[in-house]
Length: 366
Ligand SMILES: Nc1ncnc2c1ncn2[C@@H]1O[C@H](COP(=O)(O)OP(=O)(O)OP(=O)(O)O)[C@@H](O)[C@H]1O
Ligand SMILES: [Mg+2]
Image (tube, rainbow, N blue to C red):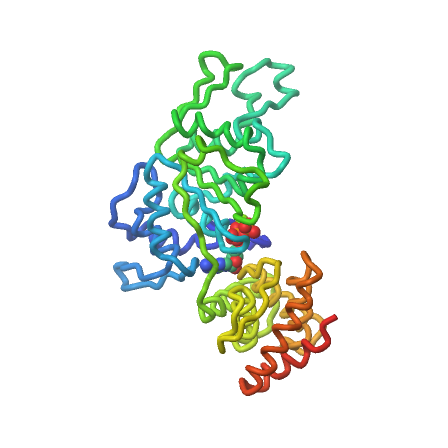
């Protein structure tokens, strides 16, 4: 079988999606692949009743289940969905899961950057074809938005606030009238959106002020704030699950030690909240302490163990990775990390050998 680093959600979970579709008895919005009930099961996990018995569906998004339901209902209506929140809170992941489950495609995406132009949002031209044949449908290069309208699927707009506000605003007319006009094509230039079309945007609250959204555009979206995971056990579960998937994809045959994942989950949780489980206030680093970063620090340590080490994660490698992740934005964060480990040394000394080795390795932090 062909291998890819990160297959799209609809490929990665194709078996689960097919199983849900085959046994879906719920009401479906026009042209959706699954009913809202099945979409919810796909994202937050559960069971699906098949003629052969019940089959378990894995949970993919941890946290606010009501938010998932609201997001699905928004998408079934005429307003777009805007997922906002801190970096690394699974906004992109959730928008991919929603797109794959509702319309079978998660890759119809515009990536918002400072360089995103109006043609990337609407349409552009194949200039060689334009010169030889003049403006015609063949010469048109449709944007993901146009593809979404014509096929009746979602278009995803990633990091929308990185795009200048006047460019973002080209979405307004499409979202209000569900029409896109291509004047160069004359009578054929009217594209009407088919049922099933909608837009899922994501925006980072840390980027606020880079490019704000206009009020007119905001009114065309329902906003949902995706919060960081606040439960250490859940965060540990996410680290373990993601690391296992990444290790399997990279043929890294190291066991994922949940106790080591817990060290990182506790550290990330306590630094993010600014208080330890024992109630001591610690200084919060300026860096974002996201679950996504925790996963990447853990996986890096796992790779180190596989390629250079004994096959088990060394605490020193974990703290080095942590240092790199935390101190990349602000020099003062190193002092804060040291302060945290001093507090932890007092409070967690009785928590076992692993914690002791972890705290000892942090003494070397430079
Ligand atoms: N609530 C959660 N449930 C499951 N996984 C989560 C959760 N929060 C974070 N993660 C992990 O973090 C990753 C989230 O990354 P993702 O790129 O989706 O975040 P994001 O919010 O889009 O970040 P950014 O703002 O930097 O784009 C997931 O792949 C997963 O490993
Ligand atoms: Mg993202």
